[in-house]
Every structure is written in structure tokens, then in C-alpha cells.
Length: 251
Image 1: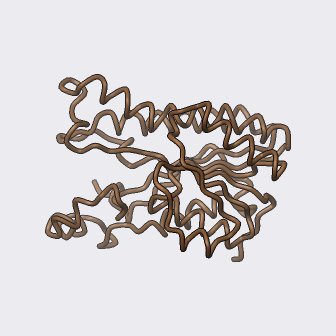
Image 2 (image 1 turned 180 degrees about the horizontal axis):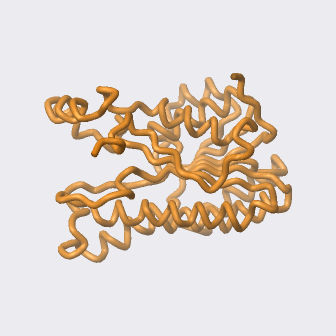
């Protein structure tokens, strides 16, 4: 099945990370102009190769700066048809039980993982409404679905709240032809999991409990995201898609 895209412009946050970079690349291949937002810039070779991608350095918790970049992009392209929100932080040694966690860490994780989603929605959804078209994909996590005896409570709780918010957007804006879906990745080999490079044994042990016998790759999340954005998914909204190699299906 060949995917098609009615829209011509997209905003990607966390765009220089593993998932965001892959999604930006695939949208670019489909002749979609992409505004990449992140604190870290992508490789210069990437921007030379994918010329309809442009990068702006911004902290997604800074509403005014993010709004300024997005408004300039909108002014040029006259629409923002797609939004992919891949922003997220997971601080393994700081994000612990909510009972023991520093409150500043809790607040910062929620600012980055959840409040940035609210910021983006305030900026972009009115533009989608004006054009009577839009498709959004937000990246949550399978950690949103269950507790853990070695918790990252701020991460899990913020990612769970993203699911609720995405479903609400799907209902609120369906009459404006705007879709909102969410992807729940399992273990994915991105910069967030740099610990696996230092501890290959831990990665191998994890792969043993994943039914497909491997950790995920950024392309796995990109493929799912691109499908949900595409015209072929135009009857899918308000849902969550688990991409985890089968790990959550285990009892």
C-alpha cells in the first residue's frame, strides 16, 4: 500500500532525536515541508540532503519562542497540516518514586513531556481549524500503562496524561477534520537509552523477554507515525497504537 498525504506542511518536536529525525526524513521524502524543533541541531548533512526540512533551536517549554517559530513557518506555507510531538525526557537516576522524588524534577518532567503538548496544541490547533484539516501524532510510552517496582513516576504519569489529552482532542476537533492519535513505544534504541551502549548484557536480557526478540528501532516508530498521519488512516482518531515488539501482550 502506497501512502498518500493531502497536507503539505508539518511541525515535529524533539526532531533531532532518533524518532523525530526518522519521522522528519520520511515526511520530507513525501514532499512535505517540515519545521524541526529541538534543543539539539541535526547533522548538517541531514539538512543538506532533506532540503524541505528546516531546523529551529528552541526549548519546547518556552511558549513564546516556540509560537514565534511556528507562526513564521505558518506565514510562509499557509498551513500546518501535521504535528508530531516526540518530545520527552526520562531521567533514570532522578525520576524515581513520587514519594521520594524532588518536586522540581517532577515539575520539570511534566513541563517537558506534557505541558509542551499543551503549548503546541494552543499554537497549532487553531491553525488547523482555520484550514479545516489536520493530523496529530503524539509519542507516549508503554510505561503509561502500568506501575513499576523500579519506578520513573513522573515519566509514566506524564505519558499517561498525554493519552487522555490526545483522546480529548480527537473528540473536540473531529468536526474540524482534525485527527489526534498517540503511539506507545516499548523499548526503543534511541539516545534516551544510551545506557545500553555501556551495558550490552542488560540489553540482551531485555531482548529475551520481548516476543520479537529485539528492542525497537526509531524506524519502527516512524513507520507507525507516518501511517497515522497519512490519508489512509483518515478514519482513525482518538486511539493509541502500541509499538513494543509484543512485550505488553505478555501476562
